[in-house]
Amino acid sequence: MMKRPCILLLSLIPLLTVGCGTKNDNSPISALLITGGCCHDYDFQKQALTSGISQHAPVEWTVVQEGGESKNFQSKLYSNPDWAKEYDVVVHNECFANTDDPSYISKIVDAHKEGVPAVVIHCAMHTYRAAEVDDWREFLGVTTRRHDHQSHYPVSVTNPDHPIMEDFPSDWVSPKDELYIIEKLWPNAQSLATGTSEETGKTHPVFWTNQYGNARVFGTTFGHTNETIANPQFQEIVSRGLLWATGRL
Image (tube, rainbow, N blue to C red; front, top):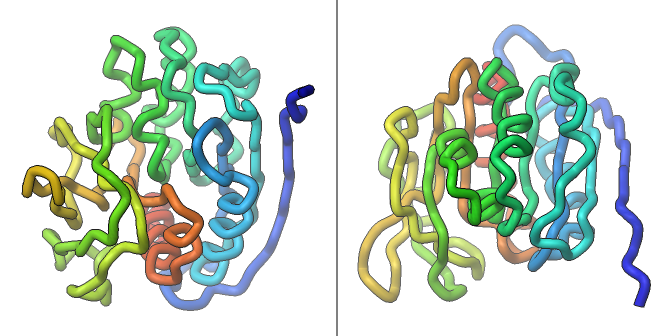
């Protein structure tokens, strides 16, 4: 069967600010969502994420979905050294675990290190997992190579004073999702909330922040299922993470 062609979807949506709000700047945030790869319903997720986040933040979205079901895809997007400069934030929700070219990965992370903020979701943490270099993992703020089974994971807030966690319920339980095993929390990363492995009893960050060069990064390992991506509380905390990363929370 012939594979579907790569998709470049451009969506510009000016929106009102509700929910999280901003302090002095209500101008739209220019956001790039990078998505695609194996193992997830990215057709659904791109729509649910952009529409859900836009209920809480004024965002103009550009969506790049490509790679099909590949696990080792390399995008031509990054051939341009200025690929991220026109955006206020880049949301990574892709899944290319076997791509391992260090020079290719450096093209991505260098743009962030120079100051382009990021939000990283679920399989972005296992993207470039096969790479021997740690550049991507340092950018994410976590090192992880595997996950526990799908379940409903109670979430414990570890940093209730962080503005991202304001009003986040203390008894929130994830929709059915995977718990990623975090091998390392990098020195510039800060855990915001954890989940507990049902297999080992160990806790692992599920929401966190990271400082990578001049860029703020917000991350979550949740987001495997459509149920999670469409969950209002999940959408709100990702929105707050995006606003924080861009200095607008």
